[in-house]
Image 1 (cartoon, helix red, strand yellow):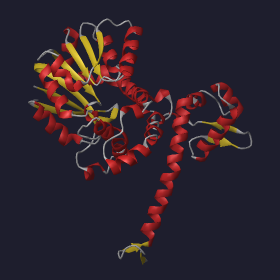
Image 2 (spheres, one colour):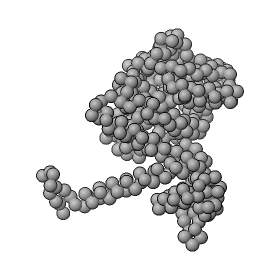
Image 3 (spheres, one colour):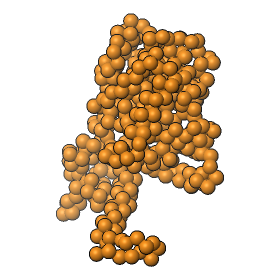
Image 4 (cartoon, one colour):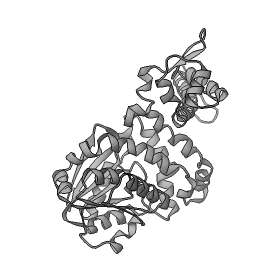
Length: 365
C-alpha cells in the first residue's frame, strides 16, 4: 500500500515507512542504553559484576563501593536493555560471560563499553556545533574537557594489545632499526603511551613526542618517569611547525597515531614529516580505516559514528583553528594521495587484526 504525503507528491510505501520508524525508535532506545554502558564502564560496575556470582543491588553496590540507589536504577536499565540478567524471585542480577567479553577491562581493545564514552562526550558540544552550521567556524579543543582522557583510555588498549609485537613487525626492518638505536619522533603524541611503550621495548633508541596540549604532554612525562625511562622526551609543540624547529633528515622513523586527520593543516604537517625524516626513513601513519567515498563505507558497522565524531569533533576542531576541516573519514584514497604529494615515494597500507578501527600506512621517502 502507498500513501501520498501531505508535504510531498512522492508516494510513501507504508510498510517501508513503518519499518523506518521502528528503526528510529530502536536508535532512540539504544542511545539511552549507550549512556548506561558508559556509566557502567566509568564506575567499574561491569568489572565488579564480572567477578561476582548473581547478587542483589545491595551486594553489587557494596562490592563496587557505590551508592545502592543509583546502582539499583542502573541495574534495572541495563537489565531492560538485555545487557544484564535478572532473577526477580531472588532480586539478583548478573553479567553473562558472553556479555562481559565485550564490556570489561579483560576484553582489552574489544571493550565496547569504553567506546561508548564518545557519545556523551560529543553530545556536550551539540549546541556549539549547531551554531556553527549557521555561522561557520568551529568548536575548539577547550570545549572537550575529557577528550584526551577518553582517547588515551581507548588508544592505550590498542597499543597494549599489539604495538610492539604486531605493529612493529609489520614495518619492514623497523624492529632491527629500533633495536640498533634510532631517532624517532611521534607527531601528535597525545598522552604519550605509544611512545613510552616503544621506548621501554627499545632502550637504545631515542624517542621524542610532540603535541600542542600541555595536559597531554604532562601525562606522557608522568608515565615515562613512573616507568623509569631515560630515552624519551615530550615537547609541547604545534606539529605544523616541526620543519622550523627540527633539522632536515633528523629522524630515522616518524610515527603518527590517529593524529593527522585532526590537524588544522594536515598537508603541511605531512610535508614537515617528509622534511624531518631522513632519506630512506620510515613514516608509520595510523589513521581511521575508511574509504574517501561515503557509499563505500556503508558496510562498515561504525560508519555513522565516523561521520558523527568528525562533525562533532575532528572536523570542527580543525575549523576552529582556521584549518582545512579534513574530517575523520578522509579515507584511504585521500590519505595515499596526500602522502604522495608530501614527498613520499612509496606508500603501503596494512590492516591489523587487533585494531579493526584503523589502517596502517607505511610510507618511505
